[in-house]
Length: 519
Image (cartoon, rainbow, N blue to C red; front, side):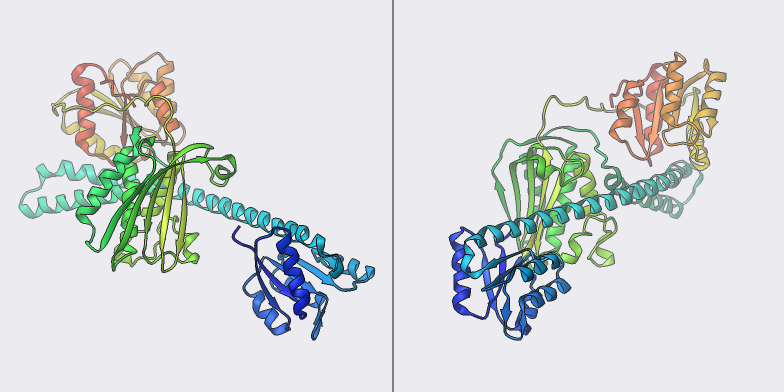
C-alpha cells in the first residue's frame, strides 16, 4: 500500500500536534491533513483517506456525527474517536455504531497500535478486493474465450470450403478477370484465417510448437524490425538484466506478443517518445501466482515493453484484454491484439501485469516460466512430396456437409476415391465394412455422437494402424498428446490449403505408410 493518508478532525492545534507526535513516535509513516470545519471535512472525504481520527467535541457538530457522515460516503474507512472525557456509556454506543476504536487524550500511547491495526485492515481489504476483481475478470475472459473459440470453430468450417473451392476452380475459370477474383477470394480467406487464429489464441491459449527459446535473441529480432519500420521520432532503448533467460515457448507466438505490445506503444506515441524493451528475472511467490489463474510459483523471465505515450485511462484498464475492445478508430484496430497476447501468455503458463498513467505512459510486463528440462519433440517438416495422382481409398469423416463436399472434390480431382461419414459412429461403421480397402482416414476432431479422437480410439482398439490425418480448428495440448498416444502423425489446423492435404496423402499412399512427422 502507498503511504497512508490520515485525515485528522481536530479544532485544537495543540491537541492535533500531540496526536501527530504520538503517531510519529510509534514509527508510523503517513501523510496527515487536519480539518475542523464540517464543510471542509466533507470536501476532504471525497479524496478517500485511509484513516480518519476525530475529536469528539467539534465546532457545530460532534465526532459521532462525523462518523455518520463518513459512513454515508465510504462504508469501510476506519474511524478512531479521541476525546478528553468520553464516558463509558458514550464509548460503548460509539463502538456499537461501528467506530473502529476510541481513546482518551491523556492516554494516547495506544494510538499508534490502534492506527496500525486499522491501516492493516485497510490493506487486507484492498488486497481482497483486488483478488476478487482479478477473479471476476478471469471468469469473464474465460467465458469470452470459450465464446471466441466456438465462433472461430464454426467460421473455420465456413472458410475451409471457400479456400479449397478457390484452389479447385482455376481450371474451370477462363480470363484474367476470373483468375483475379479467385486470387481475391484466396487472399480474403487467408486474412480471415489470421483473425480466427488470433481468436483461438485468446480463447484457448494455443501453444504451437515449443522449444527452448532464449528471450534476448527474440528481443534482438523485434528491436531490429522496429528500427527499420517505426517512425524516427521514437527512440528505442533496452534494459536487460538477465542475458541468459530461456523459456519453453513457440518462437513465433512470443514474437507476436512482443510485436503487438510494441505496435500499441508506437500508436500511443504519435508525436514520438521513448520505447524501452526489458528483460529480467523474477521469483514469483505463491501469493503473487495466486492472483493470476493458471500461474505457478517459481522463477520467471519478465519481458517488459514501456512507452512514454498517452497512457491508458483507468476506466479502460479492466477491459483492454477483452476481445474486440479497442480505443482506436475503427479502421486502425480490431481489438484482438491484446486479447490474443493474453491468450498466448496464459497458454505458456504466464501472466501479464500492466501499469499506466494517463499522459505519462504505460508498461506491460509479461511473466513466463523459466524453461526446465529437455525440449519436447518437434513436429518435422512435411517435405516436398510431388502432388501425383493416386487411386487410393480415403475415409472422410466430418459433420459439415460443405466441408465434406469440397474435400471430396479436391481429393477426387487427384484420383483419390472417397468414402464419407457425417460423425464418428457412422464413420466407424464405414471403416468396419471397408477396412481392408481403406488406405487413410481424414477426420475432424469436433463432431457430434462420437468425436474424432473417439473414432481413432475405436479403430486402434480394433487392431488397425490405419494412417490418420486429423483436422481441427485449434490444437489444445491435451488433445495433441492423446493423438500422439494413438499414433496420429498428421494434424491440420483449419482452414488449410488443398495442397497441404494432398501432400500428406501423397506421403501416405506414395510410400505405403504414414510419414512419421511427430506432433
